[in-house]
Length: 511
Ligand SMILES: Nc1nc2c(c(=O)[nH]1)N[C@H]1C(S)=C(S)[C@@H](COP(=O)(O)O)O[C@H]1N2
Ligand SMILES: [Mo]
Image (tube, rainbow, N blue to C red; front, side, top):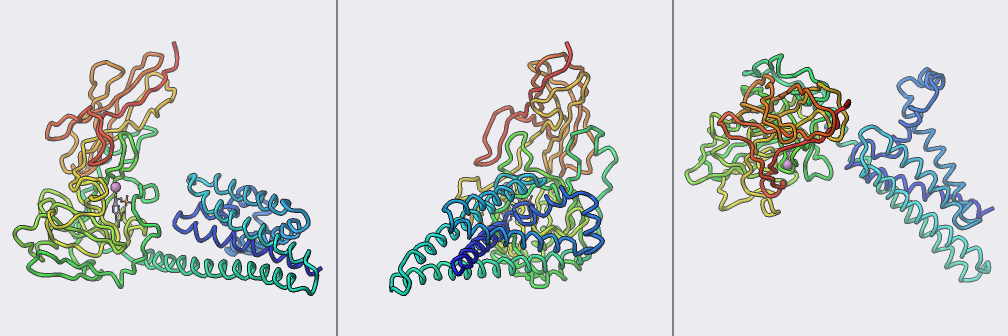
């Protein structure tokens, strides 16, 4: 009886270890990586409507915590059974554990927007649980097989209890730690959602109706925040309370400045659309997005600080230590948009996009200009300082390369004839003047360009294609407002951005 209880306790602690490891490792990955909530969502998806309605009627908005509680009770029960099974017959408890982990993995994998890395917490949790279960059962067996009352039995007993103690303490520490981290970011998220943005002193010119072509499958002109690409080195999204935030402007300046969030809000803010691009974007890739930003021109702040002669770079620093080196000239250029931004598409910056303040600069890749969770601007020289990515094999300067992309038809797709070919092209700060498409080795045909609000954003384009049946390769190239034609020369992203023409191969129906 005592052994059965001890075995059940081993199983429960194994589950505790598994869950605490999984939940802690899911924090940096975001929601679908959390196996508990993913199993909960799967249950909600699969539950018959009658049961759903009853639960909602009984528990109201408490239905989700109730579901999670039910799942945890079931898990605890299964874990106790696994512990007893593993004691009776080696491997049987492990099998049950593997089954539960497989259900969790299945739930995670079927959540919308989940990626293979989201399975990692479930796998790590299963490993931690399997270790505790297996080792615990072995030590328990050793203890039982030692002659009662002997010192060998006492040693085995101590070893068993030690394992349980370590597992319990580890699970408790991890759980308290992750709860604290979650609470912190929930707190900042609450501050973010209640923060009202001031109205811009200089609003964005209205986005022309024609900026969005009516073509299925084309990328929208303005990228919604939820689908905006995210690139950063932050394992955990920094939690910055605007009340504690300051921006220091220092280095080679006549006047050092320190700005609070309220002081920033009180400035005459500018609202502008601007397309952000990552240097790591491959030809045809999706590390690019267009948003309407609300912020204060970097140029104005620099003018207050008065850079000294000889300075040629501004090193922007994030609260998490990331830095970007931006040419001073670009930030002082009245013809180039650069903002200390607080708003993105009408909302405060989402936490993962730099809340409360980030930088955005037209025509420069993000790694040399778009510092999120911004806290310091140091006026310096390229000879004296370098941004985070420069010693890691990326160029110190990162002007965005002229690029174009085919969004539809998708590569490998089968299309009818005629069909509309469409996509986006960008040359931030210069502007797109022409987009051409070629079918196989045919002549370049000029596409129709959509409207745009400025030269700082991408432009949609489209071309109707009267296609011949069979397999065809479509290639796109853009020309910028300076008359430069996009090069066909292929370059990988490192060290200063990919180049080359995007092409897709499709099958045309008929014939
Ligand atoms: N603090 C911080 N800011 C950062 C980065 C980072 O790693 N840390 N990455 C930069 C890079 S490489 C890009 S492309 C843009 C991406 O911004 P987004 O995630 O809002 O799309 O942020 C830039 N700002
Ligand atoms: Mo990037």
